[in-house]
Each structure stands twice: as structure tokens, then as C-alpha cells.
Image (cartoon, rainbow, N blue to C red; front, side, top):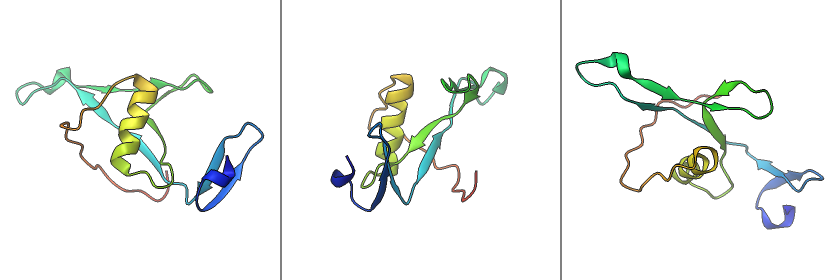
Length: 98
């Protein structure tokens, strides 16, 4: 509900609220490959329910949430993968326009 969220928020009839500023994250997860053979490397994608297209995992960061927590939450929501606290995350970049 709007009254439970700090900042400027806009809520729809379905109770989904978008608060500003709207910060989004996308996850790039790769697996496989080795120092001797990069041919086995793969990038993980999800299939969007709204367009049926493949996409990187991601979503909006909640107000007051850290980027690291948002990454872990989105990975759990979209892939049911629990990213342990010991897993090292690497920032690839920061972009103002998708």
C-alpha cells in the first residue's frame, strides 16, 4: 500500500506501487567455461510471461533495499535460486538509459 512506502509513490488499482526514483537491476549469470575452454560458457536467461521473449533476470529495487539484496531477491523470485552470502557478485556497469 502507498502509505507504507517512503518517497513519492504511484499505486495502481491492483495495489502494485512504483516509488521514485525507480532504480532497476539486471542480472547476468554465466556458467561453464574454463581458462582453457570458453566454448562451454553459457548465459542464463528467463522467458518473459508478457512477451514470451528471452531476457536477463532483473527488476526494480525496493525503496530502502540494497542492490545486493535486490539481486538476491530477484534471483530467488525468477529462478528459485538462493544466492548464498559467500557468493561474490561483480558489478558490470551502471547505465542511465537502457
